[in-house]
Length: 150
Length: 110
Image (tube, rainbow over all chains, first blue to last red):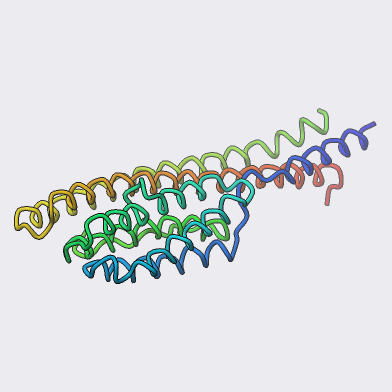
């Protein structure tokens, strides 16, 4: 009787333990975040040029951001990360997608905006990269403080 | 005293300590985060106000930067929510580990 009770108890815990509620680490998702951070910052640094000169690069970046979002959105228990990707890529949000839309509308942007926006977008990606890294090992990674801060 | 009582007596203090550590970590992170973000936002706004006054930023660009700072606050909150989700999962696994280890120690002492 006692042995049966413990068997049931241990099986219950084993079953509960098997149902993870957090997303698994994905090397592909981590690479998407780091690669697209670099790609985004490179293009933003060129946004003082006319948009038409870089429209193909902007189209490539938009497609790559869409793919990264779709990948993240397809992973189990990954809703939070997918929402972060959506904010980064959406043209209605003031991150990369919104910046590309603003650049397209205005034709070109001021050097001050291009400089300041690199800091903003780097920070947005750092939050995403930090979350991806925490899926592997819990750490207190932080977005780098912008130049001149603190 | 039943075996279940023995297990609870041994496991509960360990689970309580784990829960306190878990709660403290979350509170420390959230408070530290907010302080850092407010400081960083104040510095940025001061810099952007200067750039706007010097006409190095167009008013539309200035507004866009301010909106991006709000978006960063949301991104940071999402990051914290995601990390909390991972921590809760690890906390739950630790609790299960403690209960199973304790159960084995009680059933098969030594």
